[in-house]
View (cartoon, rainbow, N blue to C red):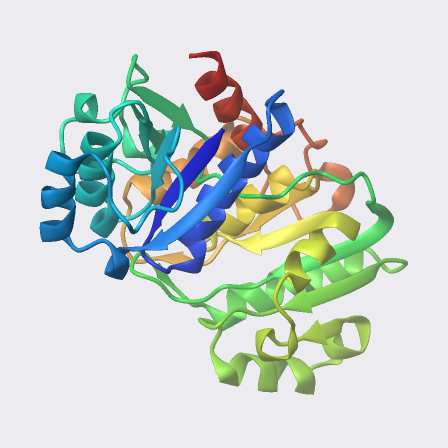
Length: 296
């Protein structure tokens, strides 16, 4: 079984495609191979010509599935589906084209689309994480985001939450990391505060690729600021107890609503004590989607 992934080069999009590919690889009785092709290698005009020839030199092996993530991949996925009509087209987003033009659209529930013959809905975006069952008691990870289109960083609120987490877990190993959106001044202030002596602080600039996913495998609990939606779902997939640190909202939309919904549905909690966090669920969205695709 061969998968061609039409890539826009974005790491977050690639993570979704790799997550689904690896889940299919784990479940399939036959070998599954993966070929990534950047959109620059697939000019639209060349693909239009290729639909008449039923082949293109850009693709090394005839695919069984064609994946795309991101708006710039949609038309290319559709056209490749015409070049290779035996392949199933899979777009991992709410597409701008009619859903029925693709074999499957994999869409997060917060986009408000009903599941159907062509639509598989998911809780959050897919990712390649698997729970490796290596979680250590009293090991805590705090992952901080920053301001976004819908959130405004509030240093006072974040420091108050960290202070509560530290005070409630005097015996815990507490690792704290930032993101590229975390204000530089925040770390300066944190390092000057009494809290710093209770934390192992790893600024994002000092962490190698994959570091945070390894930390999630070791943490009993992960607290994430509510702007970092993908990271909340990654921590759930890793099998951690997950706490949400509230920051100010600039506006309410489908993303903020999805955070409220996962708190209300007891997937995560806004409590600051491990004992008050929800016990980890078997959260395996990529596995569930892979099962759906392979069964059809």
